[in-house]
Image (cartoon, rainbow, N blue to C red):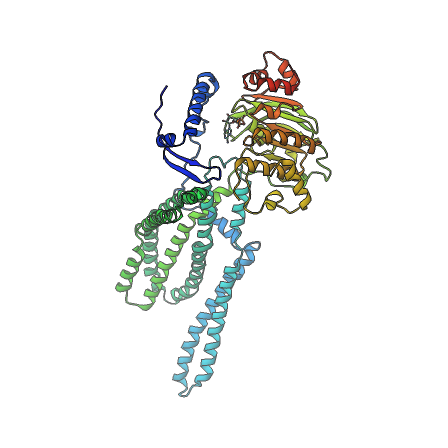
Amino acid sequence: MTRKVTGYAVTLDINGRIIDAGSLSSALVRVPLLKTELEEGLKELDNVSAEDPISSTIKEPSTAGGKLIMAEEVEVGHVGWKTFGLFLRTLGGCFPLLFFVSFIGLDVVSEMALALQTWFLDFWASQYQDHEMADTLHYLSRYGAIFLVCLGLKALGFFVFVTSQMTIHRLLMDAVLYMWGWLDTTPVSRIIARCTQDIGSVDGPLTHQFCALAQVTVSMTINRAAVLLFTPIFIIPASVIGVLGGWLGQIFIAAQLPVKRELSNAKAPVLAHVGAAIAGTVSVRAYGDEERAFYDLNRWITVRIDALGATFSASLLHGSFTVAATWLLTSGSLNMAMAFSGIILVWIRLINLVEVESSSLERISGYLEADQEPRPTSQGVPPAYWPASGELRVENLSARYSLDGPKVLHDVSFTVDSGQHIGAVGRTGSGKSTLALSLLRTIYTEGDVYYDGIKTDTLNLDALRSNITIIPQMPELLSGTLRQNLDPFEQFDDATLNDALRAAGAGGNLSVGQRQVLALARAIVRGSKLLILDEATSAIDFKTDTVIQSTLRNELKDVTLITIAHRLQTIMDADKILVLNAGHIVEFDTPRNLLANEDGIFRKLVNESADKETLYVMAGAN
Ligand SMILES: Nc1ncnc2c1ncn2[C@@H]1O[C@H](COP(=O)(O)OP(=O)(O)OP(=O)(O)O)[C@@H](O)[C@H]1O
């Protein structure tokens, strides 16, 4: 069968440098080894799709509407009081009441001092009518003193405001770290947007505008209320201006708030682009294309951000207040009316701006209300001796990835003695990794798991998870030294770390196999009683894998080891093999007994393997 080969091929030499790049067809001519590999690969693919009924029946995982990533939610209508209450509650840190009393109190006193200053000026002027030679220095020094008191009080109020500790960011970080079962459906860029752009809006514009609003409210109440008291006729223009301003404000909010909400949502993909570019730094360097990539990225972001910013700025009725104010000011004749109309419009405008910026609060409070993992409690702290052994008892364990999702594990029960080595096998999608995640309680589970005699759902999650070590297929490394990666909390000495590296077979930027070796060393250093290897040596060559497996058995004698592996040789000398099929345990016995079962799934898997004879020998069954 002939196939048309399309695409772009990059060939690396043994040092990881690019030796050839171009169309795949021309690469196949230039690099003969590639042609052989491709032909073999295509042949295997043909065989697999013809033989394996499972792979042809695998369906896309379904979530609501068949979508894995849901569109980001956008609120409609006004920002609710509940949301704004979150801002008010967190504004004063641990002492919100004290904060409001001191901030508003200082502002009230400083406004009174300002009124006193005006009165004093009037009083000073009147002295020249009564006495021809009033003592200027005397009045000037008193006037200056009142001014300084005013200034001091205003400054103190502002100081209280800016030093008040906002706790929203801490609540948000907590919520993000504890949120349950959502990382699969939430792009990281959305989380970054809430933790940077939305927190930035709350810390910056919202806080400043709220501060200005509070001050204008106090000033308007104290000064203008006095004017109204003495000249009640001003109530008429004040009411007209207030109603007109409020009406314009409603139109402004109706246009501005959705724009701000869409703008916030639209930034997440921009951040995702930045994230992708950071992740692809190695490729960018390999092509020697840093400068172009930097320029392109800058252009990409600048054009989009500018376009969004321009849309935001050009949104409707931005200048309506100014127009209204000008009209009123030109038509009015009295100074007082002018000042009064001005301050009312400023006040309404500030209320609108606070509401627009509060849309960021909405997005933050959405995360605060999401389903979260249980927080640690004093009852959940395990006794100091726990875990003394790696004994594991699982009773009717079921698991699902979301509350409304299907069960992926169904009433699984098994017991593992301390120090036993269990190999978990099964077809792709049978639930092996899900079982590992259920033991760590990172997904929704029902049923009971006892680890060294204690039911794990009675334990704090941090206690449970710090006593189980899992190495996934693609281990995460921290940026930093090898030592920091092995021992992030600096608990062990060099000798222990060296021993662990040697035991793991270890001999910047590591290959997947090298990462796995390092993660194994990290797991050995941690010394948990329960170690789960989820395809943890899949990228390590077979010879090294064999050495690692035998070292693990010798080094970790009293550690319960659950090894999930597709490569059957990795688990063939395990004490027991657990076979999963569609979320059910279908077999659980020693490899030898399982191979003796003519109709067994495990036996079928072994018989399908190319190294069938070796596997039978390893299991001691012939
Ligand atoms: N994050 C997820 N959200 C929803 N369903 C999931 C998720 N991860 C896995 N599943 C589903 O759970 C089932 C079991 O998957 P799991 O990853 O446990 O299989 P596995 O046996 O480990 O497969 P593999 O050998 O390919 O790693 C599959 O049907 C899969 O579609």
